[in-house]
Length: 375
Image (tube, rainbow, N blue to C red; front, side, top):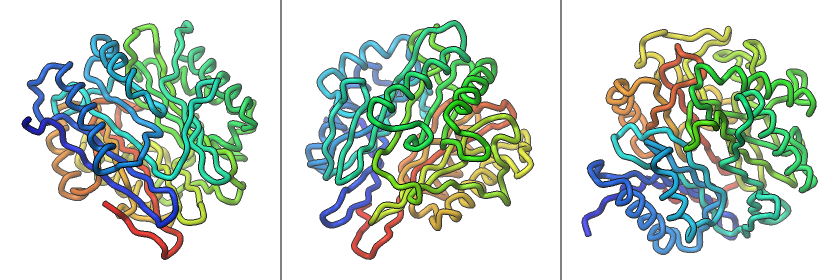
């Protein structure tokens, strides 16, 4: 059978420790039907688990669709036999012209289960990693939907002895018609965070707020989130890059630019959705996607440097574009600078119209000599 899927893979392995991997799976031939693309993608994923990553389990995966309204039902049915870990589905069309792409985060040396309240628990040693994905409701507007999403999540965490301010590390908000509905997300998040002692005087949570659609047009906001139980406060650090970026509260929003966590053998870094912005909150290089891309890289590089990391530690990239016509030039720039980092390019307008491109990433750096990077 002719190969129909490309798999870009990165990994971090330590002897007698938890191994972690990121994989981006993409379809090669965009002329295949959607059903064919889904089947080839999931078969390639299964083969990856059975061969190259034998013993690894998926702790989180996200599917990017070109037409969620027409494609979600079949994908959900196909996933019934492969429903391990948390998974998210969002309409953010892959910009290579295919109908589906997939990002999956996998680990070895952990135990995973779905808890009664829907959170996916991934456990090793004294740590419990709690993932939740594909959360949505049909309240009347984006503000109320966001408020319900956050309050429900707070209740889920509290059932596990956790708190939003102490344990949540990362969130993602996918917003239908982001130019119209994002302000409702901002208002609800600001108000709920204030009740949880998440303020400019304490800290916020690393986050991406970006355009993304659900299959149901009445869903204006979807949310994915990640929390960790078992951390000491001194293990968690927030990234500011104040020479290049301003605090988000200065323009009315509430998220951290990035967060890193130190474990015994590694530092994990979570970079929020980052665009071409300066430390006054202004858009840099309006209308020029190439220069915006370069400034975005500079901003991310500065955040990584603050965590004593660099792009060589980055395990995957998600790249969001507002205008499909920018795909060719931006992808060429990324492939030239980051040829080996797993990445996917998605049609997803950023929360401010003047931003033409945004990116997010995760990175991992060894904190001891007893390690090796596998890919």
